[in-house]
Picture 1: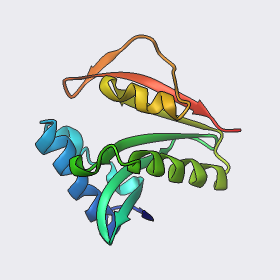
Picture 2 (picture 1 turned 135 degrees about the vertical axis):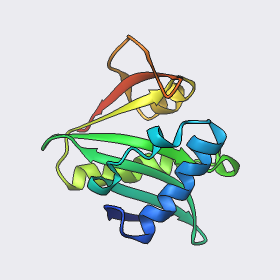
Picture 3 (picture 1 turned 90 degrees about the horizontal axis):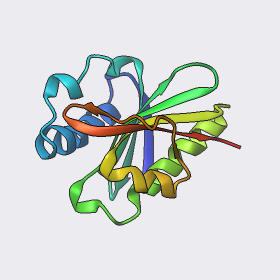
Amino acid sequence: MQFKWATGTNNQVYQDALSIRRKVFIEEQHVDETIEIDGTDNTKHHVVGYLDNIPQATARINPLDQDTLKIQRVAVHQTQRGLGLGRQLMNEIENWARTNNFKRLILSAQDPVIPFYERANYLISNPEGYFEAGIPHHDMEKVLH
């Protein structure tokens, strides 16, 4: 899988990321569009994974401070799940984080995919779950070494 990064919303990478997010979150999971497209994409980093130039996986990256990145909007096209694309995407993000001297990654995981993140050595950081967009979530984190 080939990865492309961009910042803000005036680029093709963001448009590709948004197309995946619309399919996964809005169409498949029925997340309200005003929640998914929250008006903050223009200040975030976006990464998209391509197979044969077709966008298949994406995430939004939000640096919180000099040490911490928040990973958001992780999505893989439904037809491509189970093929390791999500793991490749997370590896790409971790490599980017290390290159940019970040020490800690945090994310809000939908409960059904917590095992995916646990396999990537993320730990639940807040045992109190919560609902976001009507979907149960838990906070998770990973310290980079």
